[in-house]
Figure 1 (tube, rainbow, N blue to C red):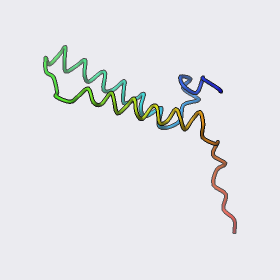
Figure 2: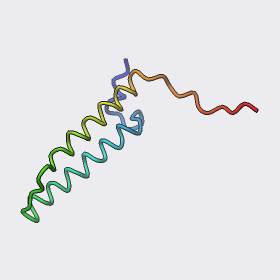
Figure 3: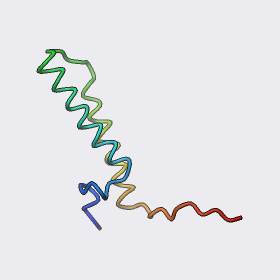
Length: 75
Protein backbone atom coordinates (compact mmCIF):
# COMPACT_ATOMS: atom_id res chain seq x y z
CA UNK A 1 0.00 0.00 0.00
CA UNK A 2 1.42 3.36 -1.04
CA UNK A 3 0.93 5.74 1.90
CA UNK A 4 2.34 8.68 -0.07
CA UNK A 5 -1.19 8.91 -1.52
CA UNK A 6 -2.18 10.39 1.83
CA UNK A 7 0.11 13.39 1.82
CA UNK A 8 2.14 13.80 -1.37
CA UNK A 9 0.53 16.59 -3.45
CA UNK A 10 1.05 14.90 -6.82
CA UNK A 11 -0.54 11.67 -5.55
CA UNK A 12 -3.74 13.25 -4.19
CA UNK A 13 -6.97 12.79 -6.08
CA UNK A 14 -9.50 15.57 -6.59
CA UNK A 15 -11.48 14.72 -3.43
CA UNK A 16 -8.39 14.95 -1.25
CA UNK A 17 -7.21 18.14 -2.96
CA UNK A 18 -10.58 19.85 -2.52
CA UNK A 19 -10.75 18.73 1.13
CA UNK A 20 -7.27 20.07 1.93
CA UNK A 21 -7.96 23.33 0.13
CA UNK A 22 -11.27 23.69 1.99
CA UNK A 23 -9.58 22.92 5.28
CA UNK A 24 -6.91 25.57 4.71
CA UNK A 25 -9.41 28.20 3.54
CA UNK A 26 -11.84 27.45 6.38
CA UNK A 27 -9.01 27.61 8.90
CA UNK A 28 -7.91 30.97 7.53
CA UNK A 29 -11.45 32.31 7.64
CA UNK A 30 -11.88 30.97 11.16
CA UNK A 31 -8.69 32.69 12.34
CA UNK A 32 -9.69 35.95 10.66
CA UNK A 33 -13.14 35.88 12.20
CA UNK A 34 -11.76 35.09 15.64
CA UNK A 35 -8.72 37.36 15.88
CA UNK A 36 -9.52 40.25 13.51
CA UNK A 37 -13.28 40.61 13.71
CA UNK A 38 -13.83 39.04 17.15
CA UNK A 39 -16.82 37.19 15.80
CA UNK A 40 -17.87 33.55 15.93
CA UNK A 41 -20.23 31.81 13.55
CA UNK A 42 -22.45 29.16 15.05
CA UNK A 43 -21.87 25.78 13.42
CA UNK A 44 -18.63 26.84 11.69
CA UNK A 45 -16.79 23.86 13.20
CA UNK A 46 -18.98 21.48 11.20
CA UNK A 47 -17.05 22.55 8.12
CA UNK A 48 -14.02 20.74 9.49
CA UNK A 49 -16.06 17.56 9.89
CA UNK A 50 -17.22 17.86 6.27
CA UNK A 51 -13.69 18.45 4.98
CA UNK A 52 -12.39 15.50 7.00
CA UNK A 53 -15.14 13.23 5.67
CA UNK A 54 -14.41 14.30 2.10
CA UNK A 55 -10.70 13.64 2.65
CA UNK A 56 -11.42 10.17 4.06
CA UNK A 57 -13.66 9.33 1.08
CA UNK A 58 -10.96 10.55 -1.30
CA UNK A 59 -8.31 8.58 0.54
CA UNK A 60 -10.33 5.38 0.35
CA UNK A 61 -10.86 5.90 -3.37
CA UNK A 62 -7.18 6.67 -3.84
CA UNK A 63 -5.91 3.67 -1.88
CA UNK A 64 -8.43 1.00 -2.86
CA UNK A 65 -9.92 2.23 -6.14
CA UNK A 66 -8.83 0.92 -9.47
CA UNK A 67 -6.85 3.32 -11.64
CA UNK A 68 -8.98 4.95 -14.27
CA UNK A 69 -8.27 3.47 -17.67
CA UNK A 70 -9.52 6.61 -19.39
CA UNK A 71 -12.33 7.05 -21.84
CA UNK A 72 -12.16 4.89 -24.92
CA UNK A 73 -14.65 5.51 -27.65
CA UNK A 74 -15.31 2.64 -29.99
CA UNK A 75 -16.87 3.55 -33.31
